[in-house]
Length: 394
Image 1 (tube, rainbow, N blue to C red):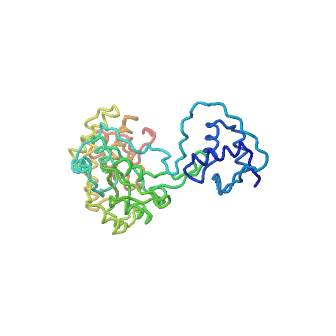
Image 2 (image 1 turned 30 degrees about the vertical axis):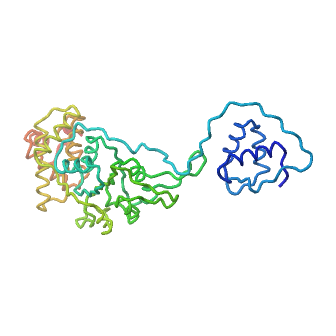
């Protein structure tokens, strides 16, 4: 490597005296040179031709040639320049975004019931107290936790689990940011640092890769293996998981994607709450709130819907039907009714996802409960029992 000019030697010596480490990046050196009165172009040329590069984007002065021993040309005194703000080094570990850590908004349609009071007490306590909330689909598990955080004004992070979810998705991984590879912290680490509630939604849909969370579920410091950084959970951090099963799989085949969760993993949850569907009185309040939300005023329809849903669930428990009408689906029917203004059409559109026999049985049951819909159905049925589609709204 060729000898350095006097100016290059001055730049080199000034930088070595000021630097804390023998390794540095190109931008750091150029910014330093310009801030200390050296020419930016000369600084770039010096790095490209006279400085040893040890790996991509990283240089060292320890192997750089020394100044010439022959003719010494005195360096011109640089013009004084205003002091520049110190250049902050690029972070090796950072968050690409923190938008997933927030205090959820209060929902006017939410009705407090069931385990809400218990969940609220645990969240407000600030203790690390992992909870596992199990229950059938559409009965308000996730919303209960979200609204408990909203009313306690606690930040929370919701992580949706799929069979593909792995340590990279949860803890974090390397990402390309501004042309540089950095380690971006995942939602779990962000929740720990913020002292937020970590909601792991549909935890029984994951694979054995979720075992990466075992240390997190102990409430102790967690080592990020890819960077060596140790994360201390901030006060208030807690973990709440929701699932349709209790981690033992589903024998009935309703939740075929539900997996059997490792016993050692489940043992780290302090308590398990089994969330049922709401009672008749609670569900009527929920449906009425959704009627108000969508600007629909039909109290008779709201009461009939709840009676219909409760009857189907009772039949389901007795083994009479293979499917169920959830509270969430009742709310979907209310929203559909607000668009079309037709009770039967709203129900038909929202139960079309079931097989033909189940769909017909559900509609038939509602017609028996609601005389208004039953009379309309009879008027649109011919003498041979075939529905008259020419007079239907479809």
